[in-house]
Image (cartoon, rainbow, N blue to C red; front, side, top):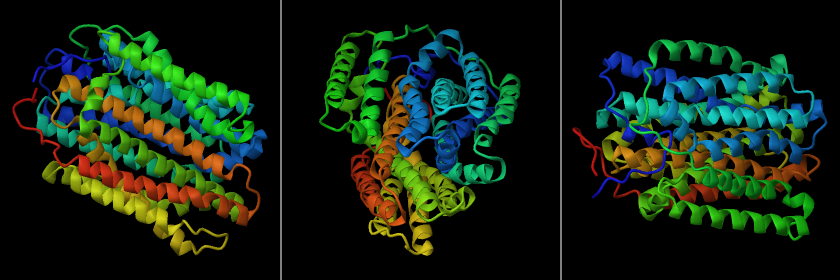
Length: 482
């Protein structure tokens, strides 16, 4: 099969780069550790804010629906810019763009911590998303470039997925502790020393790399993709308030549909598109993208419903609510590396089956949620969902890139990363819409029940994805298949 040079993406750039200088094994895994630190920060900031939302709302005078934008302003921008960041990295250098992303992320974190109003905070979170878009996929391209051996690269991707899963699950616990001890602004201040350390480590350990040839930025595609994502998620958030059949909503549907159609048309006609739509003809890739959306919808619905139910419905403190999700973090932490080893040994299907089964079981535990539901049942459900989440990320990445040469595996990984953030944004919007108008413990519990059914449904989607991943090929030593 002919190797197709695809769009410029953070990951795809690894496949068209000149051969990197040989690094020692210690240096290669140090590069992974440094890049994973930044990845941990990106994932952490996707969920760490959730547990502090009720406190932020009281401090800034905002309701639940408005607070959804604090999370989704970050995830929408992150999802929309993930792929385009690679074109800049190819042209100007991956390490340079990575360091720029760290600086933007750090400055935006300081602005978030000082935000005097909700609008200011939402705007700063969007800028944080810009910085984050230059971190996770660009860092993965750096890692791929540093590890030319396919088997070692596969292990590194497993570690990468594990770190990301851990960061997402650890966010509520970390956020609860920080909010309880130092107030909600501390969830943004904590980024500053981590960013400072990462900047030093990148300067010392991470080599520069570029694409073999600079690729043009697909500006029309980028604008249309961001517009389609932003309008779609905005409708999910604001729909209950403005009315699903109101004139503004109908106009929004038209804009989202037109932007999506125009995006597809533009991408199919460009020589160097933002997104290689031909990848969606591969059953495994399309299934992996769907699975990535599903697992992050499930995670974010779980986190937001838990936060609002425990704090507003049962009167728990942010720390107590964060600690309640500790079983989820433990499950993800223990099972993510196990999943990576399983993928390397037997392929992605088995861990995906486990992921789907555990996520579905966890959601089903809470479909009858009441204001006095047993804490033990809550903890058991969170543990099951955490285990499922831990098993999901490595096989989804592997299914997306399995059997592809690096030139195409890169864009596949980037699109999957974007799909995760789309799932996060959609999950927050759906969960917030369910409970936005609920008042009182019983009302919040009742309003959240469809959300737990949705979580169970996401587990079923993962089972379907597992079936589609059966033919995923294993990497072979000595080169990539083309």
